[in-house]
Image (cartoon, rainbow, N blue to C red; front, side, top):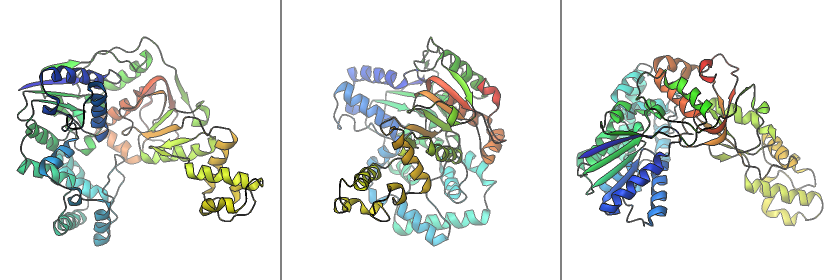
Length: 457
């Protein structure tokens, strides 16, 4: 079996390079005997879409272009009714008296889901579980472990970890010849065991990723396994995204990461605009910018404070403006002016407290903050402006923008974690700083917890 590693730093065209390798592989191998998998559904989807468009493939041709979990799901013949869902987490919450969502974030703030995350890490990466165990209540942990196992057993359902474990026990390797694994730096030891079995029959495997962008160590990712996969490696040497001065800042971060592969790559032959401002109000936002924070809590503070500025925005993909609410407001304006009657407003009446000819701001069912936001967006004529994008360092991986604004503030818990997992937190900052294609703005911190200022100058 031939093994290769592709290192793709920010903006170096990793997916495009993989498509080139895929094209060469298809010269000798039928597409249905090729697998293209990624750590995330988004990564796999991008690979599928590009391949279908470029090579005019159909779904049968790309039957192995899936996430690792999806491959195991289909290989085992599982159906969706056998998988855990939100309703099951609600049931677990009712049975235990502990509020579970089944979703643990990189903020490390959840006081309940952390127990489910620990159970998951026991399978994915015992070393991470061992670190977590120090902060958990032993009695609560034993109780949650028992109740969770009993719930799955009684209902007859699997969680996503069970899917991988059952494949390792009962599944067969895929009957294929070539495999591509994208974003491999984010795979856990358990997932590495799965892909090693899935692709046992392959004659050639390509893995790609970037250890400097490995931001899922908190969720079990094993970067060392990615870097040691093969001595046959290739570093993509040209970033088509990063300006010269932004790359210099980024390299100030990576030089402090202890465990990494050294990678030389060139920036664009231009400088971007670097600036530092006290607030978003002074950042000269025009619409379409990307605003980033390390934690969801800091991000929400920023987006809530931004709502009065008169620009539409997306908070982690969710629009600040509801199109149905906007339509209701437009119709109410006609109603206020006597252009239409109350009868014409009947299908929008659920959006208002009463149907009197008063300004819509006085009757629409929205919070006071939302009313100010809608009002300012409409008054300033910004309804069709590109929304400002608010996202976290973790969620923004893979995106890029002409103007990126980074908030360096940290929560107390994450700040303390920086001293325990220094490399991990620096990788998060590196990902955030390298999203820009041109301008980079840093918000001056207002709290006492933030990334060291030397990384921004």
